[in-house]
Length: 115
Length: 109
Image (cartoon, rainbow over all chains, first blue to last red; front, top):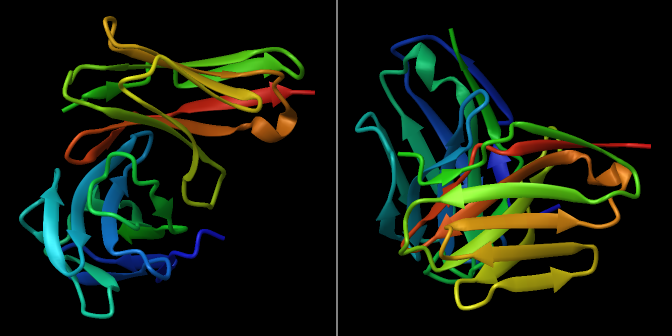
């Protein structure tokens, strides 16, 4: 158990809809990262928040947005969903700001299926 | 934008033998490299890392080698055990972390 929790575990929705994925980091961790893993693909970095502020942005679509709240939990919002958005979405957390030598602890993921 | 590549999607080895997983990268700005291990239905877990100022880091059965001139790193597992069967992701970081597509290792008893 990494200490990172993600809800829901599974989500099935239709094209054009909007969903929210939730992540609670490990106690004491200030950074939250979101990743997308599509079928047979590696983990694609989407976005990082550190102590409530956006710190780094990766391959995140404009239809996607995220935020980190004062209690440090984070939400990833996916809108106007397309079939290609079906994937595993992982949240990770780390103590520090820089992704370099900060070990990231991953949650179990949310499997999103868009029909 | 494939800055980190794992060209072997799968690898099968016999228990007790060495497993060698390879990873190539293109961005010379990367200054930290990590290996993560992933079991089905779980998130990736950190395995071992190496700073760009080193060329080798060892932790028990796991050793990571870094060849900066070739922009190549490898993970050696000796001896391999059936419990090592998992997907292994190589990752490299500078401002953010980039992952490879993963290599599925199967260790046969």
